[in-house]
Amino acid sequence: MASEAIVLEVDGPHGARPVRISSPSRVLWPQAGLTKLDLARYLVEVAPAFLRANGDRPISLQRFTGDVDGESFFSKNPPKGAPDYLRSVPVVYPSGRSHPQLVLDEPAAVVWAAQMNTIVFHPWASRAGAPDLPDELRIDLDPQPGTTFADVVVAAHALRTVLGEAGLTAFVKTSGNRGLHVFAPIEPAHEFLEVRRAVIAAARELERRMPEQVTTAWWKEERGARIFVDYNQANRDRTMAGAYSPRALPAAPVSTPVTWAELDDVDPAAFTVATVPERLRTVGDPWEDLHATAGGIEVLRQWWERDAQAGLGELPFPPDFPKMPGEPPRVQPSRARRPA
Image: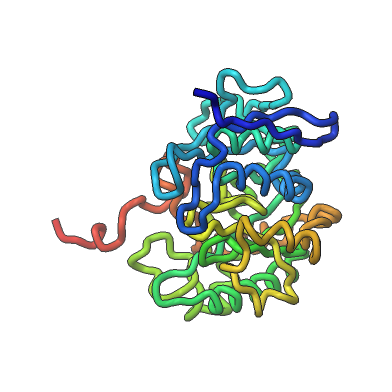
């Protein structure tokens, strides 16, 4: 029986490369009726903007064994049989272990990832040439039950103001779900822990200004109906879906950069694998100049020191991290209060 596999000729900086797509008719998003070939063609169309945002970075591939309703796993290391144009870079994980991690440099590499059943792309906040030094300050605004996307938009505008006062230029994108991601380009001069503390400083300042709308509480039982500022996404080896990455949700949404001017009227559900290529053709890429000017985190570091002197120190780390100096007990508050 003949294979249904097809070969896409993918243009790139080194000319066209053939990328084989096996099972092109395999449906990845049953509700949207989109296939593996649709995904590959989407990535070809958005490749310039996608690579501007996610290329030249260590990246984790979220690969699926079936469609988006099935199981997935994260792939970080170059698999056997990877094409010779695929690159990797040694990175150090929170455990202290070092291992090569994938880097995507050209459109053919991105389409190859789709052939490997990747749907969601998770880039690091640092470049491949300096993986220990983030060049992006990233803040995830995560709506909690009882809040709306409109609430997230209000918090994002306020966060932009906070970052501006700290000397940083903020950019925003939809998460591809209910939240927003706010990025600010920074000089790659500080290790992940320092950048995490800068994020916490910004988050605390936002929380002070909007205590009824925003929270830095790590434990869900303490968040209430507020927007959670997920500071732990700034940790080493902690990533969020990259700009122009599809999401594994029924309607095939895409994490999409938007301008601040259009944010108030944005409908995140309108940005999908089927619609984003046309948006790029007609509107352009709002993040095209994201790294044109990088800021510093000196002001945010001053805010961190000010808060530390006032008794506000470290916040909890993710559960798989080693115990960190100064970290509060990693136990749910309601359990910590439970009598023996």
